[in-house]
Image 1 (cartoon, rainbow, N blue to C red):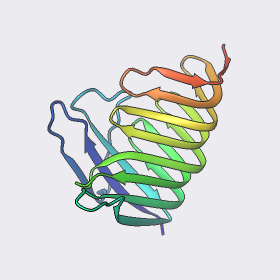
Image 2: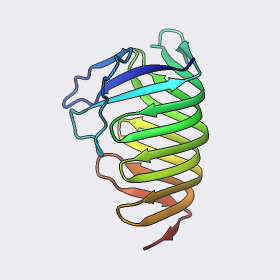
Image 3: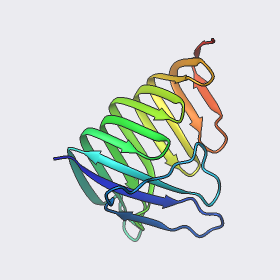
Image 4: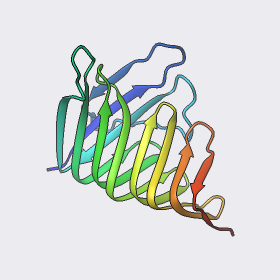
Length: 172
């Protein structure tokens, strides 16, 4: 039975950051602006057939340990302007349990505002906030009428800038 998990991470206005991970309440809404202004929060709802927490990954003697959440099977990640579907998603957590990166693979499709895309793999970084589509990357904007294709596409979530490697562009 698929289950939902809500992860919320704050993008700090100064050096202070707060993060929470809690079960999503019925009817609770998550927020992701089209860009992430300083001080704004990011909340993701995660749904999968299986969720596994791998604690203390990458530990070395005397160093802080990181963990990761592994989601497998019919994975969905949602927020206000982001929807991601993939066969497998990994959420990397820092030593304090705060998410800092999301990686997806196996049939990735994404909707980001008016943009829709697909790729073999995707990564979402919280700092700096950006999404990268890799391998057979495609991104289309209904609003602008553009269709982009390339080996990888990166979208800066703060300013909306898009970079495409080995680009093919279809203009309206």
